[in-house]
Image 1 (tube, rainbow, N blue to C red):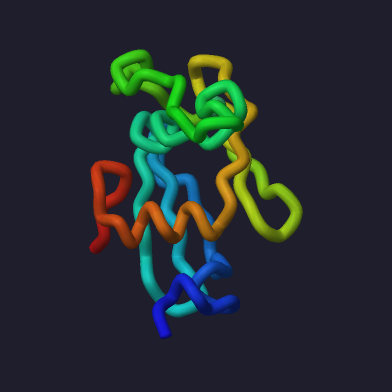
Image 2 (spheres, rainbow, N blue to C red):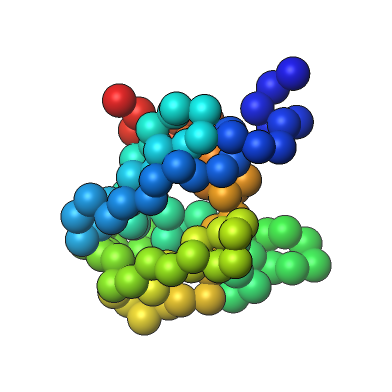
Length: 114
Ligand SMILES: [Zn+2]
């Protein structure tokens, strides 16, 4: 069974730490450590302003997000997600732990693993 089908440790953060102005580290319950960079996370913002809810089309252009973007604040949303306030003023994105774990597994430009 893959991590996607599981509930539990793989999508439960053991530790969430803001490492710098522009980087967050999550240590998951299953021991995996993921690093997230602010500009990359901002570009995949799942909120209704950034993604068309009807079509799923991404409205936000990647180049519209500065590489110098930083994290002003990060807060837990209930027990399932993080909400970021970015230095560009955007703060409507709710990043579920499932989404964050998925981004990490994709090994794309969003994260780097140790
Ligand atoms: Zn957004």
